[in-house]
Image 1 (cartoon, rainbow, N blue to C red):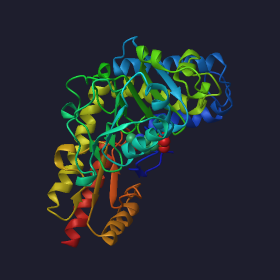
Image 2: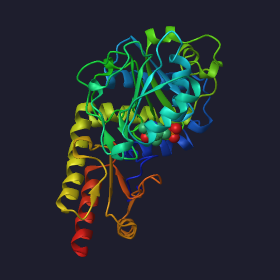
Image 3: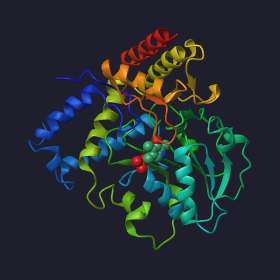
Length: 364
Ligand SMILES: *Cc1c(COP(=O)(O)O)cnc(C)c1O
């Protein structure tokens, strides 16, 4: 029994139907062990094999070399906002630099300041967080500990294009809302992190990919749980990890590899979805405005408004009647937002585009 509801939520987001089917079975009894996944020991051989496979799938999808460690963490991306400066903004380097391009990078920038001196490399406030900078044009201190940015601003619907050239300082990216949505040059990053609940699985687990040489910078004396080395040396099994969330993340990584066929195909599908929705919005000729300036439109989150909260609410109601949910904009900017994460199907996006066009025609 599958649900007919089309989920456009900003997060937690939609998951693939086949993953939900397997998860339902696993909650009652895992085929491999006869025990519910919710009661499986994190010290079991079964869980060790899940961790191994999830890491292998991510390595394969990202084309990662052995220079990188992968670890599964808790505390969401918000904890990374604190632990990254604790681990990597050490006094041996100039202050880390932060790109503030929207809601989530703003949170990262604010949290870092509580841990270490940090510099704001760019702030999009003056233009209302509708644009992004060209990363390679920023004036970054060559001895900065690192440059931090958010690859896709989930709330405002802004996405950085893929990087052409490696940055001059270690590059750290919060990829929470576009991780595994397209292929990219993973070797250009010092650290990539993404919680699962937008594109990879349920809430409760965050993936961090760290270039091993960076681990040498970590100061001694951090609480063990906040020190990346602890989690890496314990194979993501230092204290009780979120077994269920990692189990589902592994199913999603398997789905991406074997059902979707990898990130190239995922990207092609995501491009078509985004073209379908932006195409409809553009065709509505001024009835709606899209938050992002055209060059920075996100493929994952489309933030827009009819320019009137009553109209936005009316559209949400019409969409709900047709089984489309999760379209309310983030509380910080209001309006509407359609999130087109990997598991959102092309059919779902076509339904949304049709509903928008029809709504606009009726109002015209
Ligand atoms: C949703 C989101 C977050 C917040 O993550 P939590 O896991 O809730 O802490 C951080 N960064 C980005 C880019 C997000 O989209």
